[in-house]
Length: 69
Image (cartoon, rainbow, N blue to C red; front, side, top):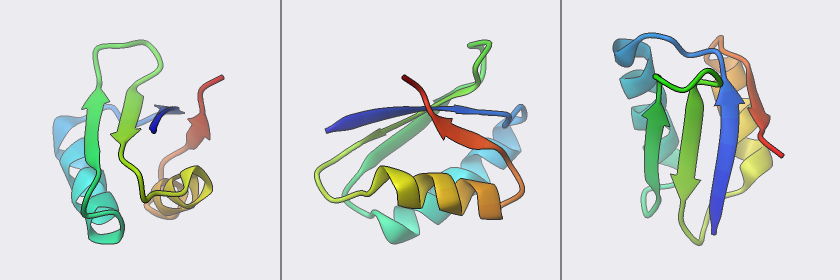
């Protein structure tokens, strides 16, 4: 399963911190950002993650995150 999220993460250091956090919760997932995209895309690929939990974790880190339709 692949889910794509729109975020407001702009700096690579912040993206790295969010990835580390998400990997703690979803260690078997592939997670990356495309900070060059206008939507600051967060992409999560794996079998054992919950999209709503990703949104919650990113939001709790101080960033906005929404599932991209």
